[in-house]
Length: 174
Length: 168
Image 1 (cartoon, one colour):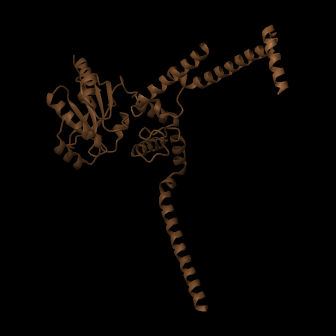
Image 2: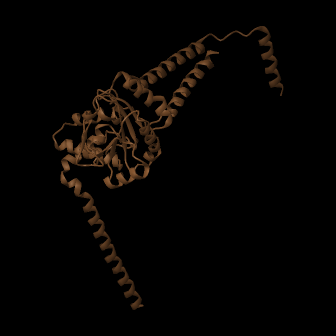
Image 3: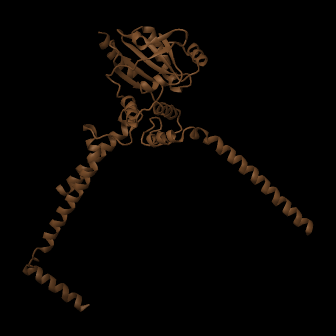
């Protein structure tokens, strides 16, 4: 009997491993920046390049950093959700306008709505590299001490907001 | 006949001219592409050697050296700048790992989380060898065992079978 049970057990273990492997998303690379201080930046504001915004300006509050671009198709998917979230006023959303053209970016916000407290310009993607951005859109939750607590890769969905992001923000604000 | 031949030659010559023009253009376009490499061939060679061992996160089966993705371009530019700033290869790799994790390395480091990855194949191989040795031993002991004596009824059965065959 064990003659057949042993190979069967080995086979089942193999199938389970392959099954788990198939359901994982290889695009979601865990960020090493979680629970680390958010990289420091000081960038020009999209709507008023004469003014800048520094990451330290947000010390003491919980905030979201959303990496977006007008050329990014998936950003359009999540955008209505961000606009709605901004209306609730739960958490300030800052936009990192990643490798974009300033005029088209402003036009894009006019067309689809502007959920951002401030958008900042990362024209050559340097700050993006510091934050480990590799696929726009990406969203970070940063706590009062300036520590990155969560990173969402790809468009934010209602499910990810309800299950992860909003409970976390509530906890951090608490 | 003569005329025809002349015509043939002239069109042949035309082909030559066209071929020469084409070669000229091809050379010109090659020269254009080669410009950025010629800027600093030593640095560029170092960049390629380093980025061949780094994974492009957008197109994950391509190395950073081979990828044409915009993202890979940016990272190559970043690496180039750091090389110009006299950073060592190790410093540059650490810079990238700090931002993108071990996943950027095609050669992952030996850590508690990667023990299975590094030792798994060796364990599988040793396990297979062990199973093979055990199986061969068991088989040898089976083969070398004394042949069993047939019981009386079996002896009888065998004899009748042999007789049957002989008759046929």
